[in-house]
Length: 95
Image (cartoon, rainbow, N blue to C red; front, side):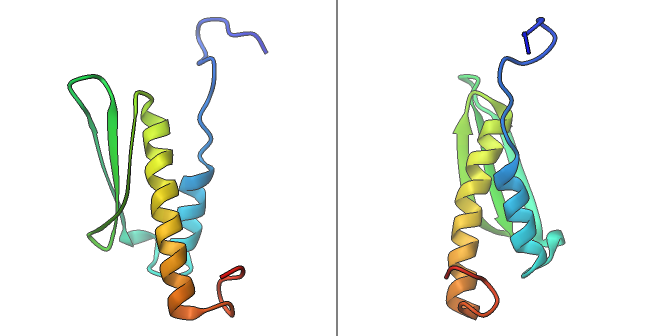
């Protein structure tokens, strides 16, 4: 598909945000999730993921969605590890 100027040349996937949401639904509940997103003076975006008011991950990128994805990836990995330690293989496959 050609880029006609109205569409971004590449789109950032939201798979890590989806994975984080799925993990939260199985543990803390989706209401436990909060985001902090700010654009820095140099134009980069800084995203922080909070779960129950505790920072779980952060990401920086010049692309807003990519910063969110990086933060979600870090947070989902941290949360997954925590849940594996707490519940073991029975509830969270692959621990």
